[in-house]
Amino acid sequence: MIILDEESKKSLSDIIVLLKEEEAKQLIECLEGLLSNVSRDEHYHFNNDNYSKEIKLALYDANGNIDHFSEECKKLIILEK
Image (cartoon, rainbow, N blue to C red; front, side, top):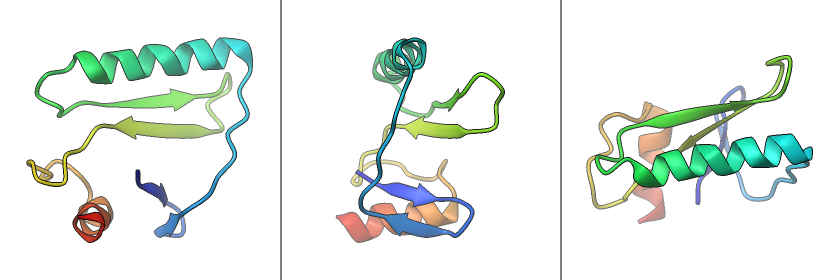
């Protein structure tokens, strides 16, 4: 698991995510979409109602193709191997 704070460009090791019931359902839909994508090249933006908060979700394989990730993400994926 990689958690990247895109503003600070720092990797985080511990976060708390508090969701409303509807947001939890939306998160499940995003995860199901990721799992159904065989090529693993999609990502999802999971936002709150007014789009002031966002979680980006993607699947990765440290031994697979990581070219479609940002440079910050690539570095973290390689370090996690």
